[in-house]
Image (cartoon, rainbow over all chains, first blue to last red; front, top):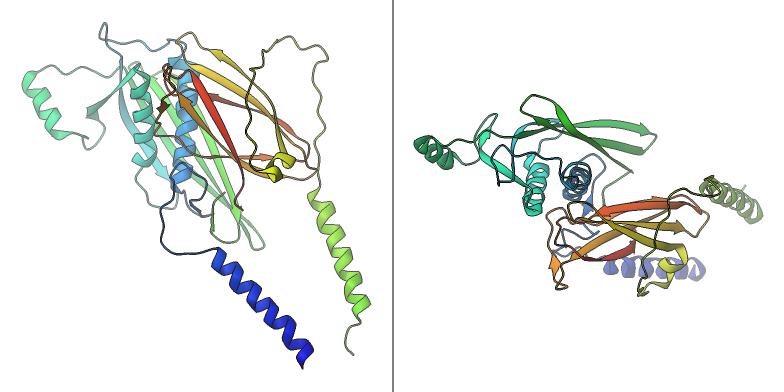
Length: 196
Length: 143
């Protein structure tokens, strides 16, 4: 009896210590770090940052850093408007989780500005649009950004896999895509976890 | 009718051998003997605080260029020193000419997976032309 009891006790103590080490008390996590929760079937906040990082890197590398952007207003950076970024995945999220990050980074390059009044649907800044209309000084966008987010799922036994494909295009006023990029993020697992 | 301990040990050993051999896959490569492109590796300073990570991966070197519009572009060559697939994360911080960090909306730890003995080139572009220096941080994957 004693022989079976002792290993069980040791095992339980070890499990308790292990659990205590992985505390689940509420705490802050660095959004740029690697300890955010990762779920297989969802696009997590770090995935949007990862995709946005790839898109901005590509856009700077092939267009902006090569001085290929042309502005319609002399002396001003090129003006970009956001067209449709379609969510074709099975989950609901705001595509601004991707688009806003890209806009912020592009604005920081000093080579691109983004319109808050030109849009396909609801205007980002309705008041600015009213003022613009009152002054009659609307400037057309030099470029438009559009895209799609696609999801593909697969399963082998208990192992689940989700692939999220981010596609973006930058088009001229003539409707010519001068830049296109695709980023695929694949996640595998049987359950959610912390970190990646 | 209880299973014998030797039989259990035998099955466990076979399972372990199968599991280990299944995970061990190393990469063979081929490239020109005399590469056309010449690269200039940057002298670097390394701070090693995780000996385990240092045994698993190695940064062979970093080279950089500045694009026509003044953006700093870096490329690092990393190698998995083990014989099995390993996952790491890395994060790049950019600094301006005054060594002040440049905040980025897309800054995030990026996953990096390397097959056994694989060498991979990873590129990154500074978010603004103001970036003049960088620091790369590596971590073993949490999972």
